[in-house]
Image (cartoon, rainbow over all chains, first blue to last red; front, side):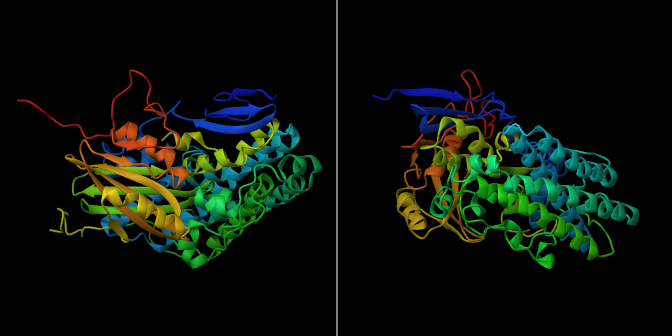
Length: 359
Length: 132
């Protein structure tokens, strides 16, 4: 008779740079049940958001995540702009797209590198991360900082990108694309990577919807939902078609992220080509009253902010639902039936960001 | 001044597609949402001082709709995790951080999802000044 064993996977594990624990019940080597545990590094950001004023909160939410800090700020600023009844200038909207898509690319590079590292492909890991350095250099050149770039503000953006900066970005992207194509070619065609991802951690289209999946997890299961299609910032002008794969396995999620890198390249180039002249910000005004929801598409999926204002200089409530928080239940559904040896790669396939989850 | 106390000529903004339902109706309405194939996005709890207000956010494609339940202090709310399993995380969070008694959560961390023994109690509730 098979023996059932409970194995704690995490909170410290080689494939998990951040702490989450999965309590795995195993029947021999097969996972029967997975129970997630978080809360190791919870920071109380939502509560802090009620104590700081509107402007201070921009710097607070940027620090929820070091990988997609700009997009947190964008989501927050868009919500406050709705509450204040202000509209950022067109140039600011295009600059927001440029920095957002550069963030998406560096996040996907980071993840593709981690995936390679999880297989022991250290050279491939270094190729992705070396290429990612080009994006970090672009942030440094255009914003003065490599991680938390702090360029988004209520009413627009804090910094402009001049002609020399535009030229620098375009030149770097040429080199980046060349390396990216070669590295992605390995990821999508290597026999070992395919063996470890194809058919692993399958999430059906119906499960993805029922379990509230978002981002590449949802789109990898054949659901074409991407918050960017709502047209926030300049996405409405630029147009975007969600990247969708239909197999629902770890390989499908990998393909979505790889293809989204090229989609982001295209978006940055088109945003630069159409970048309007003019102001980059309008002044915030008033002490808003009311409630609103702001949604944007982070690299890991839909980011959701609920904001309630009461006419004071602070929010009455700041609710933040990050994409990994939404993708933990789908992960719990992907694991039963898989082999213990596949748990690390399947877990990695949702691109977990515990920093975001532990707001 | 805008309704609700807006300042400086800024009109009060409200969220569209919000339907307020009684706590007793919540499970039936969540089941209707599930039957329609709506994706559960998350839930939001607000401290209304003498009551708690819970929004359940659902998505159909890109559009959002919301159920809103007002729960008087001391009353409980049934979990929708039997219908939307994915609600278990946020329901545990609300239970811990706001002290709302949510019953029958499919995975109930019993107050230990985020908070530890000796940690703060219901830290997301508004602080109230009492006494002289």
